[in-house]
Length: 321
Picture (cartoon, rainbow, N blue to C red):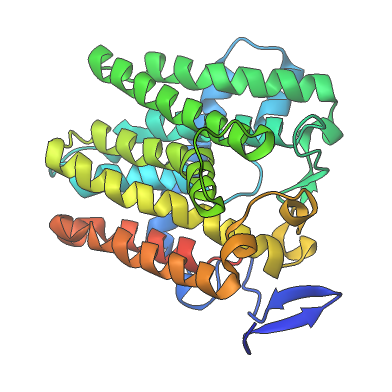
């Protein structure tokens, strides 16, 4: 598998120095100026969830999952997509409801994915999964609540009613695509005579890609993107979404559970289709490289304003968690 690979505890592992918490290795380090909006999104979500009239134990369960350790990729993509297209003087905070709504959907999906009926995981982001921390009933209900809170947030905190409606539709499309991808991944339902490679693309472009696509598009919509700008952001997002999940597939077979903060090797154990399983590690890395180059190429029309999106693409392509 090449000199970059080695054996450790019976598992194939990429030989990469582990960076400090919150950073990626080498060229994948995310500049503070790019990562900083994640803190603003967390503060916004914390304030919003606590403002809702919900049982205290439900709020506690939601915040445990929503604000736990994580990359906050979707809020960052929304924020920096806004910045890439917005006219001078526009306040990036205008996209916080969109960024927060996308993270609520992402957190809901992780809570439900971890349940015994789906992936049956005990570990998420280095901590017990919510159904292990609380109960299966609370995890189901907290996930349900995060799903609906995402749309409530958009209708309550986006001042322009027309924009709020468009954002709700965009988020619904992204959420349904994510769910469809999970169905393909766990229950099948493919139509036509698809190869394993075609099935993989269908799974990944939906399961992971559709919410990343929604995050970027929603940020750009908040920034007033015209049609050509929105199309460019969409192409960037689609490449990023597929790349993100292929890297996840690679990490599942090249890293340890302790490093990832979640169970490693679970896709292989479950017999799921993955890029390393179908194409091999080397060719999967080639696909990641091509998608990275393509995603960055679509950002040329935005010039320096899109530099944070380029940095995010670099980080996502080379992350080790």
